[in-house]
Amino acid sequence: MAGKSNWNKLDSVVAMIDQARSEGHRITTDMYNYVAGATGLDASMPTWVQEGGINDWIKRLRDPAIRKKVVAEMKAPSDQWENLMLGAGSPENVLIIGFAKDSLKSLYMGKTLGEIAKLHGKSPEETAIDLVITDSTRIETVYFLMNEENVKRQIALPYMSFGSDAGSMAPEGVFLKSSNHPRAYGNFARLLGKYTRDEKVISLEEAIRKLTSLPAGNLGIKKRGALHVGNYADVVMFNPEKIQDHATFENPHQYATGMMHVVVNGTVVLENGEHTGAKPGRVVRGPGWKKE
Image (tube, rainbow, N blue to C red; front, side, top):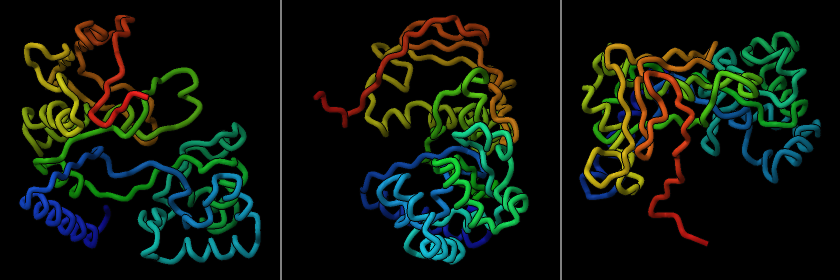
């Protein structure tokens, strides 16, 4: 959320959540602690043009009359759908990070939509449409929408837990063919280093609770999230003075440092910062899972 209007919007949302919780309603929240979110260029186009999937979407975008209508709606605020390009405030705040076609990767990956539009000599809206048609995908995109003050305010909410909202990546092989959001590598170390140790937004004990027992309880996952006799032995040991994220939007494929040992289901998988080769992980199911 960026700007004073979104500060007020956050106030309104928090007030509604606090009121609902005081009335006994069960409401949970989670976040990643960055000033940008990642999705696709679909989040900059009206939902009706995307109905039926990528092939129908592209077919409509090729129609000059529909294309003209889409461009107009992309430029105008609406209460019918959330336009993240407008939310970012500028095409310079829309970073393109993923294509399916190698030819587009070599030309445009890591550039902003504004930069690509200037290269094309077209508007950002026309350029976004061209990219979707050419790549036949939604195009992986980062939107800079939030600000640091609101991130800190959200981190401090007592009911806020944390999730990376990302897959498990590695700085090697196929993963290097696309850029990524740094949350995939740095979200949890960033909370413990930047916001807990350095900026003291919350205490170390509170940060650990928000990373362990709070989300496990929210999801109804039993025997995990806390060190108790009888629980699964999932244990993380880190150096609070050295824990640090290194992934950035410009160079996201960077591991965090300061993590010493990790035990999963009683087996050591990280020892002195190095992977042991063990893979003792298992599927973890919550109360919503039903065996077919």
